[in-house]
Image 1 (cartoon, rainbow, N blue to C red):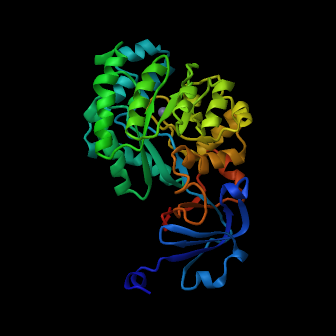
Image 2 (image 1 turned 180 degrees about the vertical axis):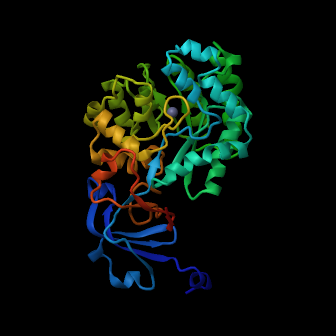
Length: 414
Ligand SMILES: [Zn+2]
């Protein structure tokens, strides 16, 4: 044994667990009622039936008795705007009191207020403003978190949002995946000049962010109130030239064909999708583009049009779910509540909700080789739950049964 190993025993056995491995080969949730996990440092060595692990394999391992608790992969929130300044509570209040969107906008509300509040903060300030939201997600078993820029809308402020996202990974035990979302909205100074904004800010900002190692993927908002498919294609072409994967906010309020465009660029995911049609669902499935459903935004804007879950299933598309945590249309920091909403509002099954917040979230981030299921070779990211059945994770509303979180093999108790 090396000196390093003697000082830091790396082998850990997690006994007496009920496992939901989510391993694709196992089918369904990949259940082992009498399960054991073996981890070596950051990696899973074994995940399966207790009988299947030779006693010799766990020799000298540190042992944890999970007392029959359920263990799932660590949760993955694959779509958030969690880094931002300020909040929109006053605007929410005004709308409840009967104000129109125009009146809210005239009072300085809407996305412009989030842009102003975000631009006022340094990288440290952005981390400080966001850390309580991040901690709330982690307390529910999240081990991987996607974070977008998109409230800066000028080059330096967009980069600062991504720098803050990267910094979060150094101050909390969590994996952060970034998306550059310069094409989120047009700032006031470019009103009516989307193409100039893309030329002057979005594209050079992307090049700069990529050079600084800040970008894992490139996102856009394809909608009548945002950018057209032609404009998004300009951004996607630049992403492809830099070797970056793409994803898209598509078909949230209308059908512009964004999901089809995303699929034609082999996008990791197309997100929202309330107005997706059958053609779009088939294109996504053929391209392996994950459908990311965001019930928090559906709920918060009181949308009536539901995403076409039946068509997505029939097309064989993969379905993930996420909080879409953002100050305007989804001030939601609970992936457990998101699961409940996806079931209640969209009719997803328990299995689809749990897979959607684990394995399919990893797929939507291009991380399926690294996390999202309990399989040998993957990162030892898992959540240990005080529940009798997995359905409880989806069924309860506003209740957190997390017992402990394990990130890269390290146990973090609540
Ligand atoms: Zn979003």
